[in-house]
Image: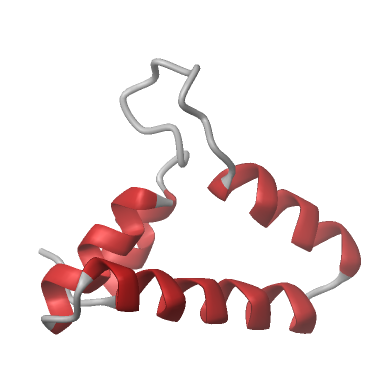
Length: 72
């Protein structure tokens, strides 16, 4: 999730602490509006994967969000 927070901070000019709050609000809203099983999948995607050594522990989620936020 840190990668998403940094991306939001970079794209908006917000501090990382404010961007974290914004990301947390968006994630909470998504989880509250989506079917119950999807919320746990979101938690799984955004959870702390610090022990995982994959190149993208978010499974491409940041690429998709980057497209939404205008990342080329």
